[in-house]
Amino acid sequence: MEKELLATLLSWASTLSGYPAPDTPPEIAWRSHEFFVEHVCNGRECRAVGWYNDEDIIYIDERFRDKEGPEVTSLYVHELVHFLQHHSGRYDSHSCSDASAREREALAVQNEYLLRLSASVARFWTVDEVTCKYE
Image (cartoon, rainbow, N blue to C red; front, side, top):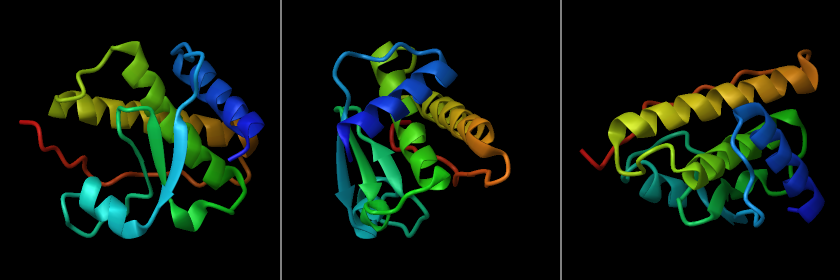
């Protein structure tokens, strides 16, 4: 992903979430669907296509690597919100209730981004129930 686009999407995530953006953006890495099944969904088939690992890396399903459009950029905004949440210290990364709250907040920002960008193309994202391995 181009630095300029990442900076723009980080600005959207920061503005819509209210979290300040750190000076250094996260790394973006693309992975296969199997990576998400293993790391996000505890080995069960799922619809996960993005994941922030709380270590300044955002993983995006490689199927989105060369795609463009509001739905794709909204996926990055969603994961960037998780990056901002982590750096804010507001949530406990090892709490199931906080994991659910983080996901709801990121989804709300993603959908607001889509509305502001172009209501005519907005397809609201939903997420599966958060898989929690902490409690």
